Length: 173
Ligand SMILES: Cc1cc2nc3c(=O)[nH]c(=O)nc-3n(C[C@H](O)[C@H](O)[C@H](O)COP(=O)(O)O)c2cc1C
Image 1 (cartoon, helix red, strand yellow):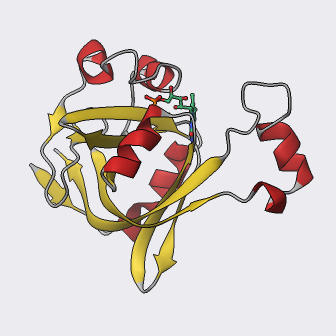
Image 2: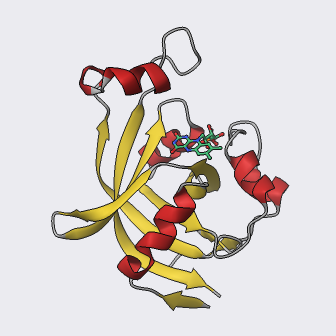
């Protein structure tokens, strides 16, 4: 069962969990994949409720988002098996089926084509209505040095911002 929520009533909960890690799920060619995210923004643009997620070029999730511009954001309510966030934050869906290996349970979506995850029951169903690659020249030097430093694996691996219009928000019960 899905209990509808007003997303703004849960904005604090979502952002607080984001600090520790939540999941971003995408799906294309019939296969879902999920990854841990720690960055995101909730707000309003074009008069619509928006969740923005920031995804590096190298992520398999980016390929899926670019193919099928829809995603769910999956937030734990209460305790979560930390292994889920650790594996989803270090392993790529290119190399493994995270749903199968972690025993994650797909929750059929209401509006879009990407499932939620029962184990992380607070769900936002989002449709990408805008995306923007970061402009390296516009990033403060301090952040460029820290997150995209030359000579590290992150060099040149900039983020793309995906603006998802929130079409449904609920808690899976
Ligand atoms: C706590 C935490 C937060 C993370 N936040 C982000 C994020 O906001 N954006 C991003 O691109 N990667 C982030 N990552 C890294 C991805 O989750 C990781 O590279 C993942 O393996 C990508 O999976 P994929 O290749 O299946 O898409 C985070 C990892 C951790 C552990």
